[in-house]
Length: 484
Image (cartoon, rainbow, N blue to C red; front, side, top):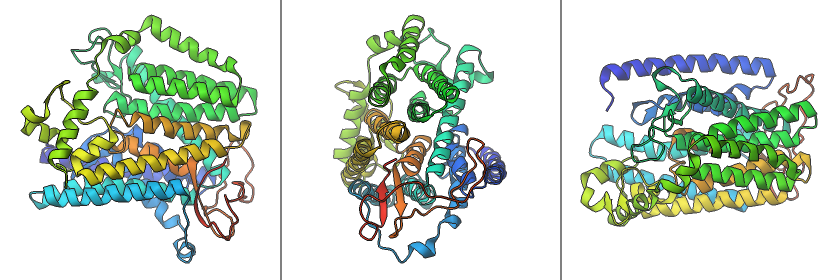
């Protein structure tokens, strides 16, 4: 637990970050001429601040997205929205039911597991509070960022953060930084131990698995920008950025992430472009296979997932109503190691590494059901967008973004992603800015002056270029999947 003097220092640092974030948001808004540009950038930049716990479940990496949301909320035209009856598409509706169920389960879990008020506040923040915050982020982004220009701006932000993380990680790996920043040491039981400087963890200051999740999304969005670009120089610059990020991803030594993103890139290129573009990806993978112990990790390191899943399942069936409390799985395992740590598949030394089982272990069976429903709804959104994305270059970014969310959901079956601030917010930003949109009954989007000056273009009157709604406007106000 963080000591009081350290808490005071960390709170001071949090205020400094907030002040810097406010100024950065003002500058971004001034330079682009778009009110929501600054808040959007703050949310997108969440990975740039390390995950350092402060108090009551809050950490330093919560400051930027909190500041972004607080700046966005006054921009939403609440008075205009109050009189409309919203009709979300099936995927959005199912995902909404799932997240609401998870929030309810987390509330029940917090009240039944907390022993005193301070602990109750911490559990509320770690569980229901964090999930509700993700929902607010998605809704705010979808309401304010449904124009084509705002989607491009957001895609640039995703790619920019990914490129920065990749460069930072590669410098840490090949050159080295003070205090071994940007790297996590390999476990002594791994073939990587003493064979590499460390696994790239970037600026996040947490598990390389989470850095890999951010890079998966940014790689696919960057590839989508490359495929959409009509200018040769810009297109090859984007592909160069894809290669840099892919190199960094391989050096996180996260097996599932690497496999998923390579598969997604192959699908994206085969469906949207020419197979020759697979050559640079092959070169990167061949280099990695020859000069790093990646292959040895794939074939020699024994995964511990079965042990972790067994431990989480036992916790869920032993605590079916309220689980053990949000964020308390490791404590519960440590309290009864004979039951939860020593499994038939080995020792369980970490959390569930599965979105559904972690929700079940910490918030009970209802929480697990909510996680299943949420994943189902998001998967439906992914499928809808993949099917409806326009053919040709125009739909490449939308198609790539859908693949990004798809691989994120798949990785969530072997890692804890929704309950981790930086990864959950990364997925929320992708969903809210690229995959769903809010429409009024007249078919227009709810947007806050959607005219950022991108690509050096002269500022022009705001034009909504997002296309027609999925069905006639009079029948389909509300939230829909983005069709490109």
